[in-house]
Image 1 (cartoon, chains in turn red, yellow):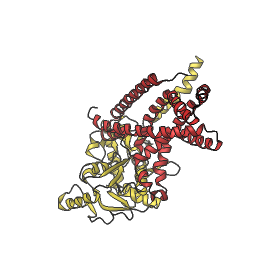
Image 2 (cartoon, chains in turn cyan, blue):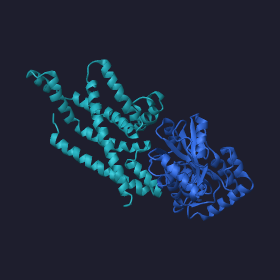
Image 3 (tube, helix red, strand yellow):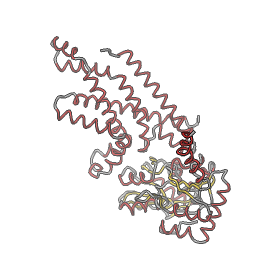
Image 4 (tube, chains in turn green, yellow):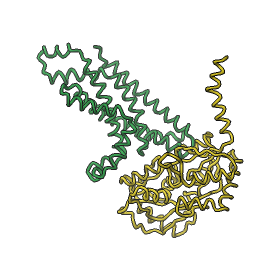
Length: 220
Length: 275
């Protein structure tokens, strides 16, 4: 069991990179779509809703296959400059994961925006603060603080989601565990070790989020 | 009392029936995703060389059989944990696998080959038609040298946990970018899509794919045998199951002598791959 540790640690680094990149892009996408979602224009609103409906309503594995094998099947894309990105399994995984977590994040942030008490905005307005400044300096920070617990859950879900990357040839933690399995024919050792590492990562994320909640948590 | 009886009859009795019915059945595991060795037809029924051969061998052993589907990467663990009793899944007899399981005598053998999409720069590689790694010598060394320089830095795709992966990882072909897939289907797909510069598998796996999909997949370089490519394909059996091993060896002898293996091989491969 000890001998398989180094290769699994290599995989853990890849898993971690996948998670960080996906959460970063996912947060930007999520924030963008959350803003669209609270827009009063029904067309913009419906578009953002359609995005989150699709990515929350289909399995991540399907999305991953669609982006990796599906897009690569389109001749026109293969001949375009986009092929440089789509060719790499790593980027395909990050696109799929970011879009997926972005959809969930947009819903988390939307509900956080909508639960901000009217009083805060009115108070800002009565002090003559512009709408734009109110949005950037008051609404966004409050929404982010309020959504911390739910977002912490989303990070942990995404960590587990990254294990799907191994089906598109990425040697992440799960990919390395699979390799150990086919080399040693000992599935229990391979997957229990991977499981323990995932658990450890979850433990770390959980505690970081808990710390942030304590420090920045917002009571309304 | 009545309730207990009902529970027993509805839930437990069927279990007993199932287990007793299975007791003397030989369960054979196959992948169902490696045509023409084993695959599935449109209705999901298992077909292929090994499926047909398995039924024939069972007839000679004189026992009922059941063919079960199992993903390739869990094949040997599934055998050792008694999910089934024998493997017939195009599994080559290698020393590495012999550490964990036993193999019957080989029933078929065929060569491995590299494949590329038409128009690849690797087409027309100057190597002999066949390389037997068991032979060694200057001809084999020269071919391997040509191969090493041709594959240098290329993305080579293959199925995980196969003799092909072992060969590519052995260091004999120099520095390549190796990508491993769960199934051969996915290797074929990414070869067509252009993510793989070249792929390695059983030669028939590529010709079968080219024929069925119409994709312009062509074989390049030599065909490979010996060395990391093992010593033919046999039935994988648990180490302690010596009785079944003997039964399979006897049945394979018989099927070879009366020409059944050759006949089934020609039907599925288009040539006699029996051994």
